[in-house]
Image (cartoon, rainbow, N blue to C red; front, side):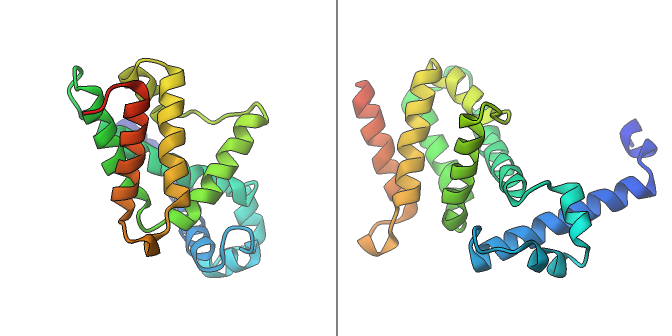
Length: 187
């Protein structure tokens, strides 16, 4: 057992468990009611804690979404980091598309809100750490290319409409092909 677990107190474990319950309840309510309509009172009722506990762990509902986005991006980043160092660009983009589709397929409604909160944080000069952005910059050869790639894919993801006859993954792959064509690096 590592030292951090040995030094963790019961209070620390309770605090972590409460934060996780609030996070889970928040996501449940956001999916049910939509982010804007979600009420902290409903979240705390589902989590079985007070409003004070919510605000102790998350100063705002936006902070829950930032945590949510961070967790999704961490798993996408892990998928990219698992690729060999010299992986061709098209393969990196395909891995990104597959990981994004897996992460966001069932949560597209929250993707729009999570992106909006993230962009607002960026515009206010307090961007959260973005390991996915850093990994893409490394893999794709710079910040501008990484931003263009993410913009193309997230725009496609947020605009996706299943009634048009394609799957979410197909829509992301189409956006990826358009992005690669724009770079002159189609598969």
